[in-house]
Length: 306
Image (cartoon, rainbow, N blue to C red; front, side, top):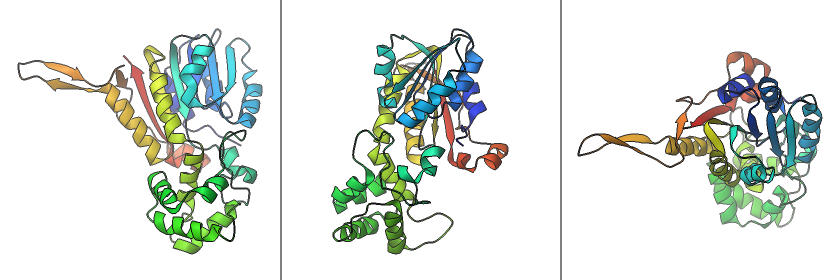
């Protein structure tokens, strides 16, 4: 079962208004969306976006519990949320949520290829109707490209060794399954510590296959322009890479006051301007961690348009 991460903290941070307009750019199984609608009540508007058609079908059923709200479920990418919202005829919104990364159902279904806990095809596409699979990426990228991918998106210290091993292995044995790749990485770099040595490689491939960095950057830029004054943007991340992107983006728009030589001061930053709703990222408490260990790496950052 998928347990929405930081549920109370996130919806509290959005400061949901009665009858408000909200965008859930990563709808998933609609855990956060249901709580938003429960608080927003009669007349609320919610647009839920997801690339996973299976998740959309399940969330659409759950959202039928809110007949007094205007709910629209859209198959698409959160990077396109600004266009999707405009296409729905919606102007400014009261809040936007992004819950990034991979969901528990995706991880737990071997046929999706996100995890090496069970053997399955090396797929990793959140939208299985389009795009290269992880197997196709591993089969076609050269050593330099794989090294860069594992280093930048996985922060993998053994990136070159693993890339070289993949290129060597695939000449005679195509890497088509999750277990094949995980075993090759373990054989190449050994196993030390609690985490499987293929963890960072799988993260890098998943992020590359789904263009997660590009989608996030487009969603941040497009979403901020949709917010009303006082509207809030909440983003939950699970990797240090995406958390840094969100932190840097919000900080740039929050700006700072700079003292002037001639006296006084002025604001320096990128428009539109925001206020950070919390100085530091919000993380899961002990109670949530005991119920949902996967929430350990979750970080919530929230900005309010001013």
